[in-house]
Length: 210
Image (cartoon, rainbow, N blue to C red; front, top):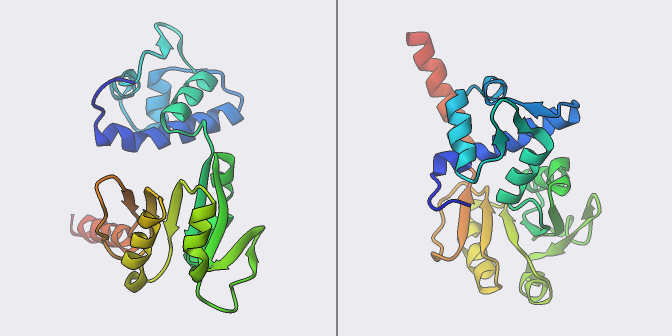
């Protein structure tokens, strides 16, 4: 991989991977930067610049081998190795994440969920066991966890993140509607669903004004 890669390029990588997977499924074996750019609403030069950040994977006059480029981008995204995942909160968001089929196909294996509700603890979501939050520390002591998904109320998110850090978890996908304080060596990606809806509302309102 090249040195510094901008956040904008990194944010586009999952889109490349998704489109290439769709092309591979459709039986497409090669694609030009112009054709891929048209699918992704990017210019051919942007496509080439992004991909060249990680090495030259195309050939002049041939374009890109779909399967090879998908494999390279999958490696860049870390999808060539298994990630052990736990979900904190077995409500609607946590359950939706647990049941989302693409995650397991891309190497994200959910090994346990945690909740405080007595009617959920001891049950399963699909084949994923739902454990008591009281068992979190002992579970982390006995199992390696790569990623924790926070899908619980904001009031409990910070304390739970602190417990995860103490238990050795260094990557968190946060659906709780709050920004969390975390050590520099911990990676936290926030997903604020209301923010996206408000942006959509803004664009609708200003589109009507125009």
